[in-house]
Image (cartoon, rainbow, N blue to C red):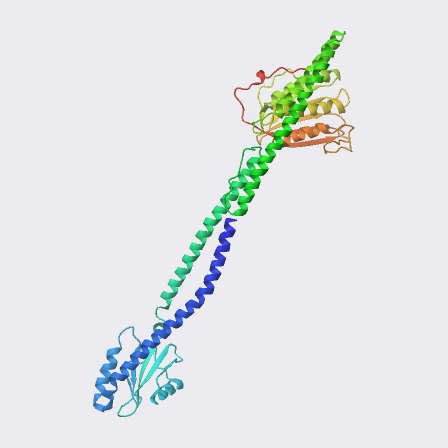
Length: 463
């Protein structure tokens, strides 16, 4: 915008100055020629008046020659006296005498008593003034101006005009640049405020500045931010209240489980109810978590924990499960993961995504189908999670849309994994065929590690 404004100002100023300065330069040229011609005419009339009495007698010719010689100095127009017999007193007109018939006609016309200005074919200008009273006829004083003398001072005037024009263009560009800087600065600050709002900083507010239109946009943006903050707060509180209401039926389930006569069944149901209570608490905690809180989780540790959680069910189905993470260590779950892989994802979201992927393998592949989970750091510096199985692959009717899978399920599991990766700035990729099975890959940008946080400090998984 700033560059466009400068270009527009430069073009407009140049056009206006061209329309003004071109006629002005022509006017200065004409004015210089008229001024020089007037001075030459005055000189010719003074010479004619001075030597008129001396030409009345033949003996005063020497006086006329001295008079003509006195007015011919360097850098001044050439002054000559043409006597009635054609004799020329004084220097010949530069750059040479005009021998054309028009020049002779001009001299003859001047002898009739008329003073006038004449432009010879050799260029420049001549002023002819008759001298009355000569003894042998009318003489003519001829003052010759060269092109350089005729337009003397024109170049200086043009340079002054050009300097004024350049100065005006520079001043116009300076003013346009200041105006453009103000507009662009206000627009960029408004855009930065919008970016902060887009990243979840609902405390960001724009300062109304610049032209009225930008001030109006800033005011409306602030109003929109306030409204979004109010709506999100209300929505999060509603979600928290709804989850809180679930505690009552969950407590009732726990009491019912405690009244069962079968102790083993009672413990199993109680464990499930406890897991449900933890899920409800997680929903409340997530709903009330600040939007600007920086998420952080160790992808390797969470993957290890969730695979350990699902291991009993996998063993019941006769599946072989392997985990490869960190520096490339691979093997069964008891092998520790030595290298943390921090990612900017909330731990509960990461847990839900991994559970969804493992759950898809357990639910939609035949029992006994092995699967493998790999966590690694790519050469580009990203964290990558891959869940691969050796099953029959996805059905031909598989669709990636939320709520439709083509495999008889809700289709929400893969969508949860996809949104978890994409919300963190990563990618989601799925590949499947009937021979090599299905391979789901989530890629995350890495987060700075937290020295105080170690995998050993994590709570023990429950299954």
